[in-house]
Amino acid sequence: MTGEAEVPQIRSVTEEELAAQRAVMARLAAENAARPARPLAWVDTYGCQQNEADSERIRGMLREMGYGFTGSEAEADLIVVNTCAVRGHAELRALGNVGALSHTKRAKPEQRIVLCGCMVQQEHMREKIRKSFPYVDLVFGTNELWRFPELLERMLRPHRGRIFEARDIDGERYEGLPVLRAEGVRAWLPIMSGCNNFCSYCVVPYVRGRERSRRPEDILAEARQLIGDGYKEIFLLGQNVNSYGRDLDGGEDFAWLLKEINAMEGEFFIRFMTSHPKDATERLFDTMAACEKVERHIHLPFQSGNDRVLRAMNRGYTGEIYRKKVAYARSLMPDVALTSDVIVGFPGETDGEFEDTVRLVEDLRFDMLFTFLYSPRVGTPAASLPDPFTKEEKQTRFDQLLQVQNRISLELQAAHVGNVYRILIDGEGDRPGQLTARSSHNRLIHLEGSPALVGTFRDAAITGSNSYSLSAELRDKEGD
Ligand code: SAH
Ligand code: SF4
View 1: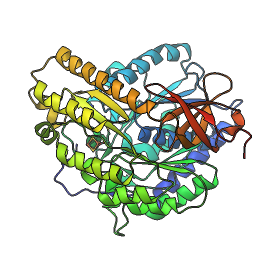
View 2: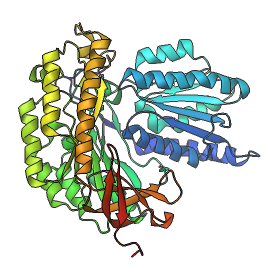
View 3: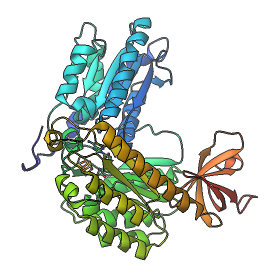
View 4: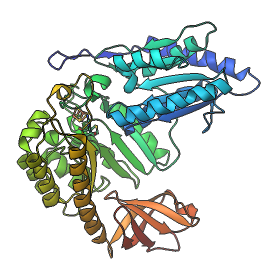
């Protein structure tokens, strides 16, 4: 694992190296085309949107290599499980599902199983797979994504051993992997990878490497392409989008990027995730307010309302600084939706310190709150702190916070009733005739209408609410 103090060593993958991967893809595509039936792959994804975006690249490469896709693990010739390491729960779920694959592989011995992503970037997890999951054929870490074709080809050779590849490096830059996006109106657009913040509880900097921004021209070209392809929601992704560009020479920052994409022609939403409060500047909020396509929503994880705990978390702000930033954002955009993440039960967090978190939640009234029980992560500083509080005590606090937030969510949701919003209809609901949509505040909305409306913007009046969704009626029922 790489330390915080060192100067990051970021290398660009060369054109020759990428060409070699393309040659492998062409070779495998020719082999697969000569088979009686196209081989089928199943790609299963855990964790955050960054992982979803990586899986879209894995699918893109697989498609280029002549694979078709299936939603059934029993039918698949190749299973790729893209894992998450952010909390123990995500790891246990992935391991449980990989465990179940021993049965599918027994029924179909020629099936090949691949594990990749953050969980297996960790040495101790690779050891566990080596020992306890002998039927897993290939394991590769987050740094090897662009080498997937080469690794897959090696894996498919007869009599090859099991393959484990996970270089412990700061990170590499590369462009141009094929992407097969999920169907729908939303496109994930990664603008950077890695993280330099080293929050003391978090494994991300260790498994995703140092922060590196994609070049602005590559991002803008991709955004233009996506809009041209008809996507209606461009979702910019990074662990800390507010530090976009710091590692580049050009002086472009995240606010600049928002402005550039906002200026592109067409009606679409621009969303982004995640903003670290320490780097959420007035310039960011000013830009949001000035850009009509940028959502009126900011996800700004505060993690704790107590200053000692925030310091121990290495977050780089106090409760007061956080409150001031929120006040500034709301002064510019009174209707801005605010969502956040919070960790309950950080090692040594006392009842009184937890009460500061509850107070902050009561005061700031988040539209939605993602509440997590602290989960110790191997190799992180917080994992070695004394932690005198029991699981039950932490669970009690967790339940208390949920109750507080549920009440606030219900109240805030009800306040939307009667308003008219420009909404993006993004899919069909569970019932026939039901559609789902999002407002610029990222509220989930249900409404009645024809499936032909999916992918369009409409004006809708909010008619009802519950704690997690709104119902609405179209204003312009007859269409355009
Ligand atoms: N880069 C983003 C968050 C990535 S992880 C940010 O800084 O906001 C998403 C969320 O998972 C975090 O905001 C945090 O609330 C939670 N999380 C991360 N590590 C955790 C851990 N060890 N235990 C519990 N929750 C954790
Ligand atoms: Fe983890 Fe902190 Fe980086 Fe977010 S900013 S990914 S919480 S280290």
